[in-house]
Length: 220
Image (cartoon, rainbow, N blue to C red; front, side):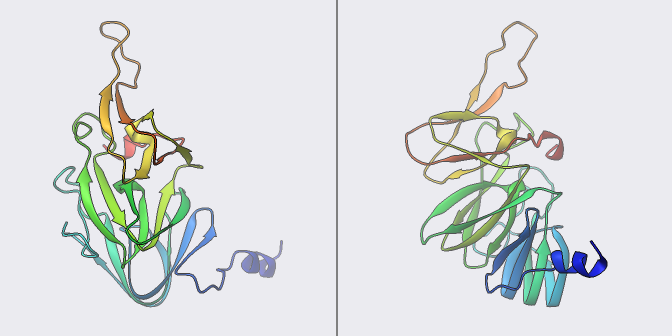
């Protein structure tokens, strides 16, 4: 492959879509106004765009923080102006979802990559997980209409409840589900299976998204 072939093969795709996956790991966000993206995820941009960190937990498009739970600071920023922003998250795969009006998704805060400014959201924590494990502390409840982009380590698996999942591998679930925390008993005194904390989803409707990776080390 010569230089011309290389540059042509990997050039951004021209599209009218707000969110366009350029490859499995990179999202092209068309900005004409304001779009929310994960802080630190910008790898390049064109046009006239400014980036502003958001540090309130007021919902809407004003931003959210993890400070109350993890003291990690601001996880999102507003990209404002006109142009294209290219975002990625540590080589994780990009997934895009279209939320219909009043359709909601609960998404792990670590796995939020971007969402349109018209998408409403609020912050929540999973009772029993905070303080018991490094993962699953903060979740973002997103409500459509609008496009949401999330990132996963590898290809996601979508499960139907009833199901138990590892909090460190749990990415998202339909907002009609309310997970509880279950503890797995140790087989012998002083020994554990390494899976002592689980998220339990009950009912017969909805879905749960997991990834083939546990993000424990990145959440400590």
